[in-house]
Amino acid sequence: MDSLLTRLEAASEGSREMDGLITIQERPGFYPSVAIAEKDAPHYTTSLDAKLPWENIVEMRYYIDPDGRDSAYTTIHEAEDGRLFEGKAKTEALARRIAALRARG
Image 1 (cartoon, rainbow, N blue to C red):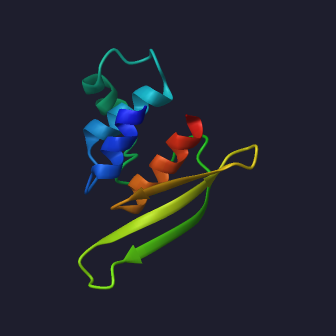
Image 2 (image 1 turned 135 degrees about the horizontal axis):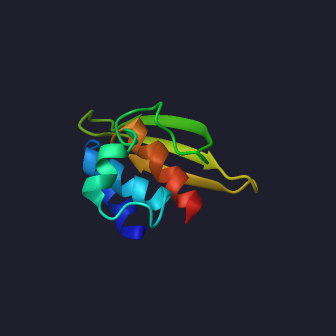
């Protein structure tokens, strides 16, 4: 899971491969390979509508550096027990998935 989170945090945009990797995390043992998972995977890393079943984003912020060269999204996921998990990424969809996956551990 840590390598997937690192990859999502470093990405400048989503991809079908990352969608497949998330799908494998969501349904362990169901898909024999990422290539097969990619075909069935929702567009988790590029769509705001393709949220994870347990995803509960309660806050989203968008930051731009003072010089205007860099920007990032920060989202907060609230778990059922009230714990908060943060996701930071270049796109809102990536930040949302990172926060939700962190909550899943």
